[in-house]
Amino acid sequence: MYAKCGDRGAAREAFDRMLHRDVIPRNTIIMAYAVHGFGRFSVQLVSEMKEKGFKPNESTFVSLLSSCSISGMVEEGNLEQAKIFIDEISLFPTARIWGSLLTASRNNQNIELAGLLAHS
Image (tube, rainbow, N blue to C red; front, top):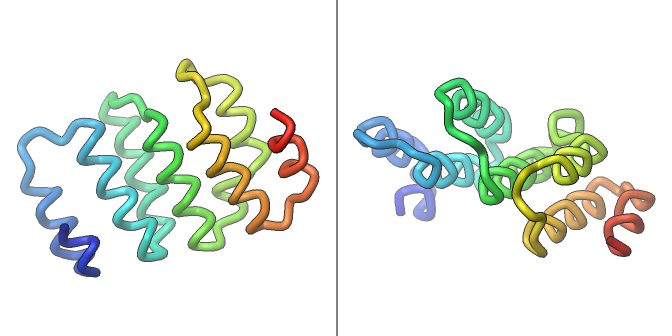
C-alpha cells in the first residue's frame, strides 16, 4: 500500500519489520522499487533473496525484468540471458512471463528477440 502511494521508504520500513519475509513480500518490495524506477535496488533484493535461500518464482522474474526495463538497465536485464533463464527455469513459462519479455524486447528495440518470442 505504501509503495502504491509513492512512499517507497515506508514500504521498505514495513518490509524490514516483517517477521516472515518469504517469496511473496519479497516480490512485493521488488516490484515497489521497480515501479518507481529503482532498478538497482530491485536487482540487489533479488540477489539477497537468493542468498537467503528463497527460490525466485514467476512474479520475481517479471518484477525484476520490469524493474530493469523501467530503469533502462539493459545490461542488467540482458534480454538474451532472460530468454535463456526462462528456457531453463523449472516453472512453465506463462503468458505473463513471455509478455514481459516481449515488452522489454520492444522497449529496448531488440526486434530479433521480439520476433522470436512472438512465434514461441
